[in-house]
Amino acid sequence: DLENALLDTRLALQAQHDPLTGLPNRLLFQDRVQQAILRGYRNRKKVALLWFDVDRLKQVNDTLGHRIGDELLSEFARRLKASIRESDTAARIGGDQFVVLAADLDSVPDAQGIAEKIMKVLRASAAFSGHPLKISASAGISVYPDHGLGPAVLMRNADLAMYQAKRAGRNGFHVFHPELSESLGRRLEIERELGNAIEAREFHLEYQPQIGRDGNLRGLEALLRWNSAKLGVVSPAEFIPVAEEAGLILQIGEWVARAACQEGAKWIRQGLDVPGIAVNASGLQLTDKTFSDMICSTLEESGFPPSKLDLEVTETALVGNLESALQQIEGLRKMGIRFSLDDFGTGYSSLNQLRTLPVDCVKVDRSFVKDLDRITGDSAALVRAIIGMGHNLRLLIVAEGVETEGQLAILRSLGCDVFQGYYFHRPQKSEAAEELMRAYAVRRPHRPINAGEGRAVSVSPIPDLVSELVN
Image (tube, one colour):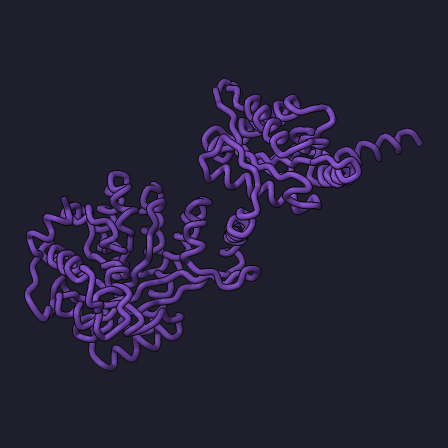
């Protein structure tokens, strides 16, 4: 009857449209893209797909609330629809993601002209419940047949181009080109899979031993490893920068700290003489106001002693965020937590700043260690300066990336305190690290090491060299 027919019509409409904005959803949009491609093929015309991502919607939701965020999305949809031709289609396909289908075009520049017109309309300021906000978006463009022959490929390539626009500073658009596909496609895959990695239990820690001059085990650096169900083993060098850019590093960093402290506490309960465990902290963590509270709760819940936790921060992250990080670092150091400056030596200017940085240990960057036993190069002079200045400041010096007997001999002669690298041990899984601690305990009981302890020679910084490096 008529009532049932109207109900069917209403349900069909709801199944194909976004309830907040009233725009077509992904399902209806993909169908319209397919139809436009068929017409384009017959008429030898181009079809453009424009992918829009609303800039900083999460910030609006977090600061003003989701109601204001929904108002912004509704206004964004209204402007998007008002700025396109009647024959075109605007759709919402995700939380802050919108797309536009523009058919019957003659060239790629035609699509760019449409994007410029839309962006101009979107940028006008507006007030939402009394809050003045400037709407902006990042957009990507893909064109049939230049950038793909089907809806799925065109949408993926427009998404890749949008991400490129975001990386370029937001509030602009970018046209897809084939070079984007491999690099950005991989990056987007990593970002998407990272979001579920903790819940899926795909992360685990490995521990790389740190060996003192006396041959004893002096510490373990906890290293994050990711074995993705979809991507396989992904290198930290590849996924950590993605996690930082995507805002996932706080969640991941907390997981690492908790996992390392829980493992360390378990080893202590088993009667093992656990040395310090070093955990990496990013610059974003240091500027997060909840970081110190997270570390405190982690230690309290796990029972791991604060004196055995070493937080490693990179030279760039600490120097770049020193003012905001200083208060948290000082509070944590008062609890007995140690701080190490990782990858030291990559910025010459920081040699002078070393006097004021709130750290207990300096780790010489592996890029200088690998060149130590070569005939040419000034790595030895730089490492000598770092070790000398560090010891004058009563800092412990750790050399990373020690891989040869020659490197070790030079580092020992320069007065380095602790060594870490493949020459001694590769990163160990939890069970292997446990066995290693037992083996070292049998060889010699653990004894704390102080800065400069047991140096073969008395080394002080070379004044001329240090002056040259820090000026």
